[in-house]
Length: 169
Image 1: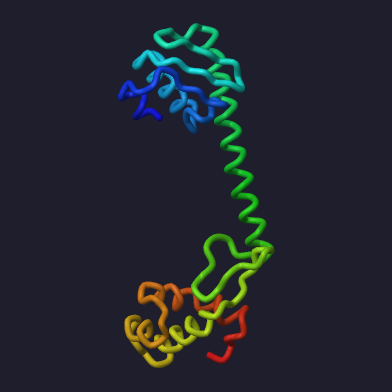
Image 2 (image 1 turned 90 degrees about the horizontal axis):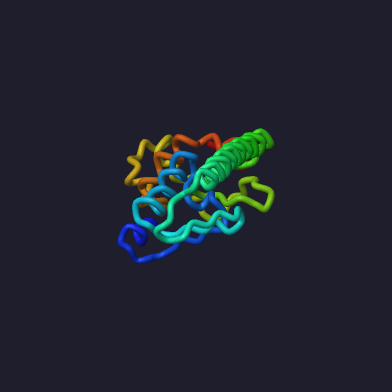
């Protein structure tokens, strides 16, 4: 959007919420000033009733409204980040997998790891490296596991051993 404003392709920017103009108070303020003052582009923030005509300037009232909205948006964004981190910690504490599942696993609807068809190949790659002393490349060729994945398998061997029935290492 800002590229189009800078290139003079638009006369007015219309957004629903001021949060669409930046993630922090500073970014929002800089973007609004660039749009309105540097490029004489109009600005409408629909949900907040802010409207600046093309070629117009921000009034003191507009500046105040923008600052309050930007401040509230930044607080909201911080709260969302905190809630997300808290939710991830709670999921981990409950034994759920957070993030992309490791090779040979998927997650069920509740977030717990479930072995896939590739689980056996992953276990075989770990065995080949640890028990047989094979290189990562040789283990990958033998098992069909991507070569760059083999070090992660070896590093995360406990995931494969403890919870998923590969105890016979």
